Length: 521
Image 1 (tube, rainbow, N blue to C red):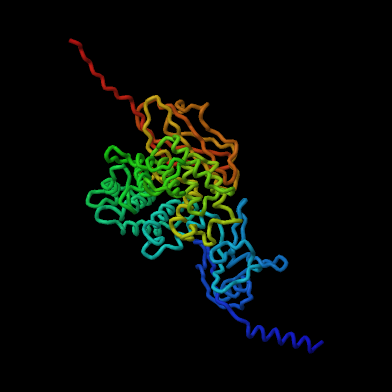
Image 2 (cartoon, rainbow, N blue to C red):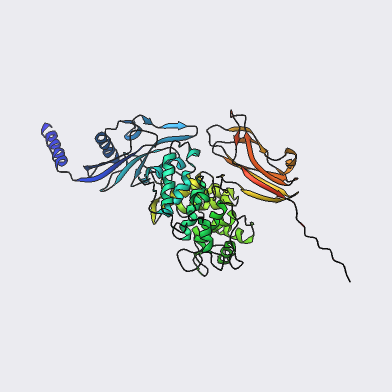
């Protein structure tokens, strides 16, 4: 018996000595406000090692202390450097295990590493916060985020929402991102082609810049874009004719600045978009392109909403076509198109469709989000543009992110109403806390109380649950000419203070009649 034991032990020892090894990397990704800094450890482990073996060895090399809980034979990384699994209301924050930046779906004890694997532990807080942190993490010394200025513009737009996610103290980084984008501006006040110029305007205005702040030789960027308008009303960048992509973002840029759309040959950008629409409601890249593009259709829907186009039959066709692209889980092909589709649905108050898309984005079982917080698509699985768009969608926002030079947030923007007309103000309210809001009341400040049509308006909710988004529609009969700054004030029994919306501006105009008097002879 003793000989057998020794022989077996000797065989095991020889196997350990001569076992083949493989190279892996282990990443520890801490939240922005935490220390120590993120760590990436390269190491070799035996070929038959599970992820737990690699992670514990990497932590030792990096000098990181792990706290591990065992459930039978399965290990769970409970804490790293005293940053632990924590329950926050109905939500959990924990160390998410990923393989090659994709959440694994199985534990560290059950996954056996392969040559070249990158095994990561990313502290999961919540989807939009993790995505914003990824953008800040990827910012370069010159302020750039992403592979090019186009991606950077969407990342910069998303950074305007950082305070909403309690990511504070990063104004220097945001300012650096603004300055980087401005450094790409050209002598004609543009940022390259009209597509890059449009999204650059969108990003700068959403971060509080004004058009006049980045004029060049007395000309602003929208004037430059206007000078390039085609005779069909559209704008171009990739070809020698108007395209849906450039035209859509140009429309959004004008809406962001609160400006009317330009015309050429009596054609507006809206005229071009509608002429490019397929019979089934989808859009291709240019007129005559038979391809049915999901993302160009989403962009066109967002642009039509930003221009205050009516929800007519053509718009409804596009919404219906896009809704058919959602699978049973609410997903639309990939993270990029699902996020952009969420914004398109929200822009047209298709809230059920938007909520279903958000459920897909937030799914942990079959995640669209990468382990490090980023989003992407098949051809570019992790990039700044798609991550920025996902932040905006998850935050319940739409394009434009602001609608006037003074940096207002989403809203109806500058509205012009006729005397005695009825204006609809929509207050979108999201409960971002872990406490249910009880007895919620909405009031409008800036217009006389007696103008509000109570029987048509939503001024009260019995409850808004954690994570729930509701909309209060308030109808006002504008009974006196003038200019009004209106904001919504929301109160609840379960909060110590009232909450104020962004300001929107309304102008009531009297009818102007031209009267001629003639006498027959």
